[in-house]
Amino acid sequence: MKAAWYKRNGAARDVLEIGELPTPLPEAGEVRVRLHASGVNPSDVKARRNRPLGAEHIVPHSDGAGIIDAVGNGVDHARIGQRVWVWNGQWRRPMGTAAEWITLPEMQAVALPETIDFAAGACLGIPAMTAIHAVNLFGDLRGRTLLVTGAGSAVGHYATQIAKMRGARVISTASAARAAHARAAGADFVIDYKAKDVAATVKGLTGGKGADGMIDMDLHSSTAIISNGALAPHGKIVCYGSSLAGDVTVSFPTLLWSSLTLQVFVVYDLLPAEREAALSGLAQMLEKNGLKHHIGARFSLDEIARAHEAVEKGDVVGNVVVEIG
Image (cartoon, rainbow, N blue to C red):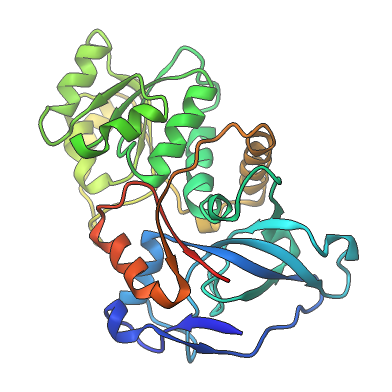
């Protein structure tokens, strides 16, 4: 099969190779998916640059979509021919979705409705799953105000949509270049974080109270927002990332005297019940075609280095997808 891989860490153009690898066969409990699209996420490019390989070579990317064409022992043969999207394709294993085929446990291949194309399906494993789990952690959002940082990003765009579906008022942050994208997701108010004091603006929009909750993409840059009173007493911060690889200092007095909750998670490692809730929620939305998907750039497998560079540069509005065959 045609695939892309790397054998050492480094820059995309220096280490990514394209060629032929053996086509995998599904083992017991597994399905084989003929991939049509592979999603490229920030974690994929960070892994290529810095994460120890753990194998002779790594086929990158955890997200993808395609059609099941073979199954292992114990898997219902009726699944052959099913359109699916996959999650955790390259999590703690060397073979990801930047290839024509992938084998993985059948639960990691989720039915994809006919109304959703493969490129959109390749955006679900990390961006949409992160977004829905973050929203799920707030419970009932009806009548509550949620601050979503980076609503112009892939996760933030989905989180804004889902929070609005759940009845929240959403205040978001986005650069001027991404403000329209955030509004298209349903944000009630978009704050240009480069031009305005985010905490002061949130307080102004909430009558001085602050937001009831916050979904945050970058704890490192959001500590000042938290310290300056953007959250109402007993509010909750749900964070899924930080631009700083090391420790982040958060004001304990602010957390203490406002009785704030700070919850951090990584989407690769959800508890089984959390994963099931996220998958179930997404399935309902996808069946109703209720989510907006935005593919910002498409590349062929031969152009995978350019795809990684586009994610690293960070100026693509929407998801970056590698189309395969």
